[in-house]
Every structure is written in C-alpha cells, then in structure tokens.
Amino acid sequence: MTEIEKKLWRRVRRFGFVFRICPFLRMAAVCNNLAFGKIDERSDIDIFVIAKSGRLFFVRTFLTGFFHLFGVRRHGNKIAGRFCLSFFIDDDFLDLSKIAIENDIYLAYWLKTMLPVVDDGVSKDLISANSWARRFFENENGFFISTEKVMVKNSYLSSFLRWIFGGTIGNFCEKKLRNWQLNRAKRKIGLINSADVSRALPYIYEAASSDLGLVVGDHILKFHNIDHRRQWRNDWIKKHGEAKLTDCQFLSM
Image 1: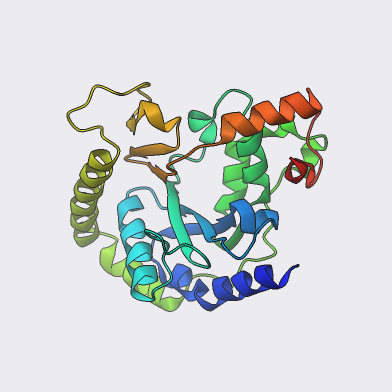
Image 2 (image 1 turned 45 degrees about the vertical axis):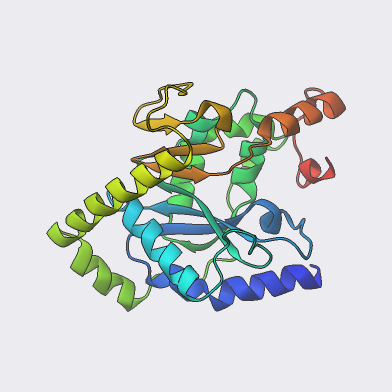
C-alpha cells in the first residue's frame, strides 16, 4: 500500500463515524480507484451508499451535510482527498443490472472490489441480487464483497435518530427532501422541459447524453458526469477477447 493510499484510508477511518451515526444507512463502501489501489495525489475517495427503502433522500442529505460541514466533501474544484458522495441506492434497488450496459465488465469488477466500512449485512444481498456479474470472473465462487474494512456497527446515536425519524416526522422529511433533490437533480441534468430521455426504466429519469452516468429516481441517485464503461469494455475485449477476469487483472488496462 502506497503512502497516498494509507493517507486516504486514515481519512476514511477518521470520518467513518459519520457513516456510523447516519440513521437508515445500511452500507457505505469505498469504491473505484481507492478500492482498486490505483490512486495518485489528485485522487478523491469515492463512496457507494445503500439506504433503507423510504429514506434514500434523508440519508443523502445527512451525509452530504455532515461531510460538507467538516470541509471534506468533494465539490467544484475541491477534489483531492475529499469524499465523493455521488452514488446512492436504497435496498429496493440492489439489482444493478437495471443500469448495466451490454457486457458490463467494469460494473461487475466494481461490485466485487468495493470495500464496505459500514455494513449491516446488506452486502450479501447485493451480491445475491447481482449474480449476473459472476459470469465475468474466472473463479465464479470468488465473487463476493470483502468486509475486512468494516468498522464497528452503527452507534447508539444512529438508533436514537432512527427512532425519531422512523415514523410520521421521517416520512414528512423524506417527502420534502425527495421533491427538492429530484427537482434540483433533474433541472441540473436538463430533464425538466426536455424530451431528451432515452429510456424509461421504472421510476428512473435518465439523460440520454449521460450514457447512464447520470440517473436520478425514487430509488437511485447516480451523479457521474462522464461514464467510461463502454470505453473500458471495448478496450478489454480488444486486448483480451472473451477472457474472464482474475483478481486485479482489470487494473492492467
């Protein structure tokens, strides 16, 4: 592990308490380059979050607010060493084949290599829901998510907040946050007053130009301005043909 990796993982541990106190958060996982071990001094810390169904927008607001308050949220040109909170789903949207491209070898590798720092066991459900990804790996039995980085389970404060926001008050907050965030997100990606919608997945709004990089809906919030998955898939096929993945093999691309 490089010194840069060690520094970023120390930051994950330092601010991991935010994930642990967040009510209705089922999993927060480091993903992409830090999980791959392929970073440099410009790298950020990509986080993938699974929320309890019916509290997706509450969880996103909670995490975004706290990480922004502590000055460690990625935004604008402030990138290096900051937390990138750009991919949220709830536990009704565990099957990511709904947003997969054809022969999505990157999404399969991304799933396998993510490293949860908080996980109530939903990572096993995530793997089960995405059994389609096993076919990309030489060792199909090795398709699982490592929990070696998981910290202590959610705190007493998290339980207290779940009690407060678990009923009518939480439903009211979720509705208000949902309307605000969906309208803001759809306006940002040009869907309001626009017919530029390429595919009508159930309860998903998608910008055609985003190539599935930008997806907003009741059960998913994915904000990746540029989606390179088709390029990576094509490069892999060009170099390796139909060969299946072995551990870390994809990083040689």
